[in-house]
Image (cartoon, rainbow, N blue to C red; front, top):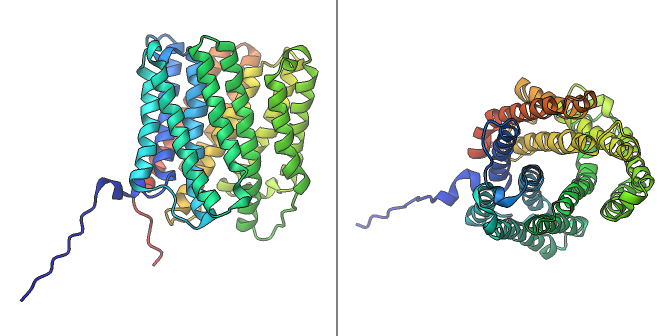
Length: 399
């Protein structure tokens, strides 16, 4: 008589969190944004002494971690998840996904604690993470001849390249240049949002509200990203300092085009659906933010940095919060609805953008920083309360 035994051993890489990229990156990016904002605010208020930041000035470290650390992680988490749907091929998972995550975590720690003379270690970790993520994405898109999404590769590569220049300039003590390139990255994210958001927002709206018809805008779909790229070129050129009317007109024009495009998506019909109105409102902030950014070039009543935060918080932060909620539900087999907790989180993130923009107009700059950061931290804490268990547990069975 022979006896056969079956061993069902699972390794750490078999944990559900390593199933798709949205799981670790949504979770860790949210935690990272809370920690980095808390450190930044604590230092601005003199609660803690300066930490190393790899020699980066505190404001540049704050901008880097929120743009490239937080924003980059969510973008890569979303794209490496979406590419599996786009191509039908298995995306990064298991040990591969774990390696990507380790590089990202190592970069965050390095920028927090490394001394200035070790800044190249921090830079190497950050760029290595981008390289591994982009190679993974490119292999899946190119191997399946997924032409519709070819545009994603140069956009993400451009963000990674600008990240390198930001750090290179900072390491060589050219902080104004590093800051300028950091600000340009926000406009690159606007291009990414105009492409991805231009696809998913009307699609999600039409799918949820079957009684409406979304009118397509092919001319705007092409013109907006191209004009934004022109904006970036002008922004990085001396023209932005010597002929301020040029970037002002370009930014205001693109902002208005975004709002025209949004009109065709019928945003007013989404007011009863938080997962939709949050996306539409974040896109509204994109148009308003670009217009206000343009006005800041020709009016002393609005500061450039204050207008920029209408986009970084009201568009990028809010759209990330909404998209993370939707993707986390959809890819774990849960109903596509949110409760009061996440609705409140959406309200808080938009409130964060508004106070960060409005209070400085009334000379309440420190108050605007503190209140805005506090609202962001609370919004993303609510996301973690609601979605941590969703992100670390297996997908629900459809049977």
